[in-house]
Image 1 (cartoon, helix red, strand yellow):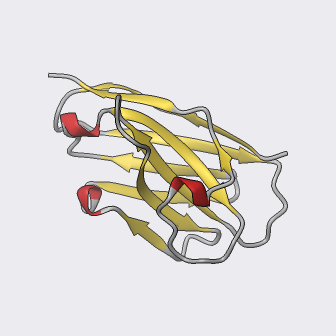
Image 2: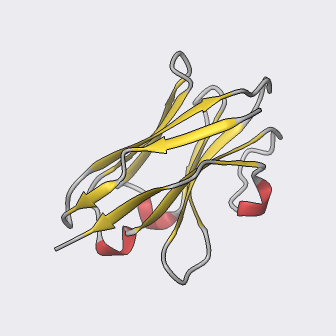
Length: 125
């Protein structure tokens, strides 16, 4: 059974940095993609970034390019999202997700079969 557990959320001032982690376990797929999504109050869940099983392919939504970096440590079965230059608009619950197909870029939430419980990131002045 696939389990995804996010951590690292918190309160951060505008311009600050934060690193989210997603610890994954229980999957047997040889090829898969993992992603970060976020959902602000009253809004739909939004794609943030994705990474391939070997880390060789990454993709970002335009609004976070140059500020966020997705990475993974396969030895630890953990994916990360390093966020810098945070803006109030980045306030949301951040979710990690996993899919087992081999399509390189999927930005819709419905394309992912496995989800974590989410971690709150709040920008505060």
